[in-house]
Length: 327
Image (cartoon, rainbow, N blue to C red; front, top):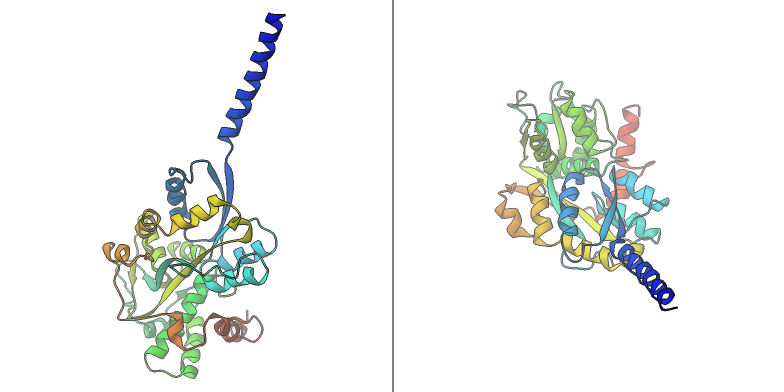
């Protein structure tokens, strides 16, 4: 009888230990949905987070693509705990859909996780001598930029071009005319900034309008390119937010906090992004253009007004320009 009891005890204890072991290795899975360009940075950042006590038992599902497409996919049901898009309206879309809390911008960095600027990536040695926005619309110069109705990077390019004209003293009407001239020099419009980079590095075009970090990325990956930071350019501010689902998990909250910490911000900077921590940006030697401006300094009334005026798919400035191109 004692042998039977002992055997039962061993079985029960063995089962309990096995259950405890399986529970110990069970991980929390977080869904990260982001725009196309920070994929490599997130590979390093996630590894660094998983090495911390807060990230020890966390795994990630990751999705990357054109910013606007990603936002619409989340709205349509793509699981997301943390979203990182290239511009604020893509987060606002999810706020309107009830998927992201209205207070997502509260905090020290107002919801921004990285900065960058719009630059001109040119062929090695800059054989076409492209230095200014005016150079983009001369002769037969071919400009590569993504489609502004799918790519957040393309919208930053549009606003950088418009704002540069205004900073040069041109009127609103003249700045819009310049946008039309510029897009008549664009032979192809890819879906995302990363796709546009691949088009340029494959040999098409004389100059690529893109994030500064994309130019740095290309060089890190062995594609030697020169890039010009124009005198007038826009500060690109990329937002990160917890969805309402993500906000329920302490691990997702910890991850967003980690993204704003010095470890992750240094990784972003190493990958070519300007940090939201000024001392890290300075330590990485990023140049500050004399004519740097923000979207708030354009006097257009913020993103809501910009979206309607420039990017409304039916009546917006860019819709009219695209129609003039036969698109």
